[in-house]
Amino acid sequence: MTTAIASAEARPRAETPAAAADKPGLAATPPLRRREMAFGMWVFLTTETLFFGVLFFAYAAMRFAHPAAFAAASRHTDVAMGTLNTAVLLTSSVTMALAVEAAEIGRARIAARLMTATLALGIVFLAIKGYAYHREYTEHLFPGAAFHFAGPLAGGAETFFWIYFVTTGFHALHLAIGVGVVGFMAWRLARGGLAAQSAASIVNAGLYWHFVDIVWIFLYPALYLVSRS
Amino acid sequence: MSATASLGARSAKVKPMRSLPLRSHLMVWLALMALLALTAGSSFVPLGTFNVVVNFTIAAIKAALVLVFFMHVARGEAAVRIAAAAGLLWLGFLFALSFVDILARGH
Image (cartoon, rainbow over all chains, first blue to last red):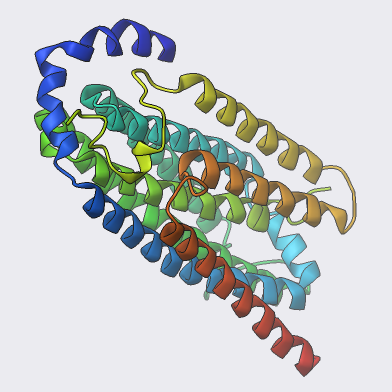
């Protein structure tokens, strides 16, 4: 299906007026401005690395302090949903990366479609995550007065679920922002082509999306795979 | 000035392409899915401490694939690579110094 997009759609459009209309948009961001934008995004992602880094450190320190409780608590997370969500998010990074490539070569319509696919996968992720939260809530795994975990490891298990909800919650918040940004850009792209939505901004949206993906890449083994064997 | 010449720093280093690099992205996707299957599968095999090593090594490989092939970190400018490296460096400081503190207290 994807090959058909490239061959049947992308190539013949190369010299059509629609594609030509996209070109001023491509040229609209001067090279120096593009460099500034990319650098600015990377600096932002560095601060984000440290933001999530603190949470990962809290995780590592608490797992070090309560290894048995973390193993027991992790077995109460839904590994099937976690694995499915990892696949969904990794796939969304591929469609986002292709959207960036499409924007870079002036294929506004294909880029908009790929970004729509990306945000749809993001919404699927959030829906699965929301369902997992709901199940964990009904199983009294949400920390607080209603938290219930049988056995002597309840204290450490509650710490695990604190970290689980804080890290996945902040991750979901980041992803929701990403869905909004990618959706807004796809909408502008579909309406006005690359003259309305610069390729340089789509590159930055892509960097943000991939960063959020990388955070999940580490959350997945940290939260779901502590002790499955 | 042609449209490709004005694309900017990142794209100037890439060969001008007229179609999407579907094959390379499909390969990266397959690699990511294979690694996901490997990490999920290995977790159900009792390997002791080695389970956590395998899981986080695979996570690091997946992150590296995303950084290199989707975020083009290796292809980026020096300033971009310095920014990315600075994040990892300070993350390293955060973990190293904080863990030293925890270990020194000895619980």
